[in-house]
Each structure stands twice: as C-alpha cells, then as structure tokens.
Image (tube, each protein chain N blue to C red):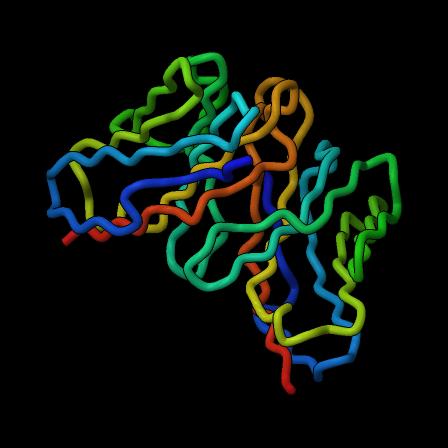
Length: 114
Length: 115
C-alpha cells in the first residue's frame, strides 16, 4: 500500500506567476483534501475533492483552484501568486465514506514566492 | 467563531517521563477530534482520534481525554522517548455538510524530549 505522495517537494516562484502542485492519494482512498501550512502555524483547510468535484472549501480566494482525476489524484492550482502564499502545501487523503476523518497526509510541497 | 488552540507552545520533558499536551476548542458543535504529530520536513501523522460521545481513548503509549464541559482535549504520552520529539497538533471536525472535509487545526505544541 502506497502512502500519499506529493510533487514537487520544493518550488520557487515569483509574485504574479501561477503554480500547479500534484498529489497522489493513498491506495484505496478516493477523497483528497488540500491544506496550507504557514511557518509556525497549524494547517489551514483549502478545499476537498470527492468524486472529481469540490466538496467543501475553506476561506481561500478563487485564485486557489483544484482538480481531481478519475484515479483520485489531485492538483492544486494557484494563480497570481502573492508573497503570503509562501507556505507548505499539504495534501491528505481519506478512505471511502470518510470524507473528513482520519486524514493521511503527504510530506507536502514547500512553496516560496519571491 | 471557531478556533482550536493549545495552551503551551513548547513542552520540555525528560526521557521516560509522561507528557501531557493540552488543547482548547471553542466550537461546541464539533464531534470529532484528532491528534497529529508532525516531524520536521514531514506532513502531519495521525496519532489518535476520539468522538464526542467518548471521554477517553487509549492507544499504544498514548491516551486522549476529552472534557466537553470545558471544551478541553489532552494528549498523554507515556514513557516519552526521544523519537516523540515533534510538533503536536489537535484538530477538530464539525458536524454537518458545511464542515465536510474541514479539519480545524490548533497552532501546535513543540515537544522536546531531553535525554
């Protein structure tokens, strides 16, 4: 059984650019959630995808968008990057029928916006 | 509003002692609580969870206590080991479709284990 994998592990972008982060869910999991973790803070919920549709969203602007594919993998897209978008972006998956419980996290993508 | 907070930012304990990490939550509608451990360079790792219809739940060397009256959650680690050094987060999930997929995390407590 493979765990949650994220790519890339590190990324440097400049303000105004766009970025795409990728996530493969744990084997057997069909729900993917994305979190933003600023330095020294707890993760903050961005949104969740279930059956290829957004299924809950946190307090993030529309320039944060996502996709889920038939194989349950997911992408997080951020447009018009701002300096405050610098953070660790975490992807988490959960088993079928458990959309908001016992999330299994990947190691994250560290995004730096210069 | 909703918030989950931890009482102490850093906890330092001697190897072999028991550790207690505390967490306060404000949303009385929350019905599911989880503790996560995050080591440097890694994502949060699930430790233990508890539902609001329980007061206590035990795992391997860990116990979670839930006091709904004062909206308080604690994580007890028995015989703390150097490998327990990490940041610990409590998180809550609320009821209802509006909270689907949303875990609210506290700020975290750093546990330092002294040899």
